[in-house]
Length: 207
Ligand SMILES: Nc1ncnc2c1ncn2[C@@H]1O[C@H](COP(=O)(O)OP(=O)(O)O)[C@@H](O)[C@H]1O
Ligand SMILES: [Mg+2]
Image 1 (spheres, rainbow, N blue to C red):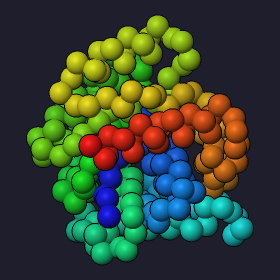
Image 2 (tube, helix red, strand yellow):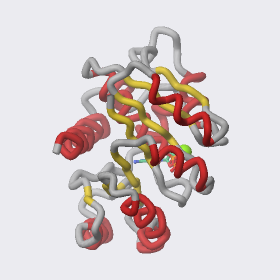
Image 3 (cartoon, protein in one colour):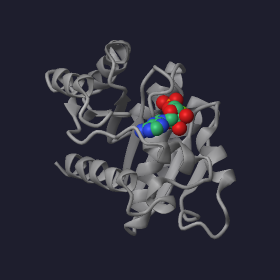
Image 4 (cartoon, helix red, strand yellow):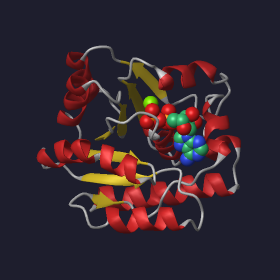
């Protein structure tokens, strides 16, 4: 089993969107996946509630966790992947999630404000000695800003996943229905993007 936490003290960077997209991709490839929703906003729980019972993602279980002490029981789940979706600001919760994780993903948007705001998160993650990687989210195709941010993130001590998540409405539309681009918009650029990012993350996890 691999436990992966999505963290970033900044909100709205795509922790939940990336977490659910990865969960869907692994599930569709035949792996068993559980999502732990440790954020009081309960976006992943909401995602599950919106899902129709005949969804191809009905096998992805979402568990709600309210206290940092409850996180540890995720280790008892009998699945291939546990994805922990954390709140931005609750440091105790994030620390508990990181403590039981095998790897840490830090979504970040391509802006200097966002990169700067993620610095304490990255430092805390690296201090654990666990594999830690940035994933750029909402990358605008062929944008100079996107390229500049990718270049600057490659120089930090954290790993950078070299495939970025693009800015696609399909992400927001699909998660509102308990789906992801992989199931709701198969064959589109957005679903190919999830596949490419997921593959790059798989390669990193297997190192
Ligand atoms: N790649 C993307 N393309 C388009 N919209 C996105 C993308 N990633 C996230 N969003 C939207 O941005 C908002 C914040 O994303 P979310 O995953 O909730 O961030 P966080 O969990 O870090 O707070 C949501 O409305 C989501 O639908
Ligand atoms: Mg979230």
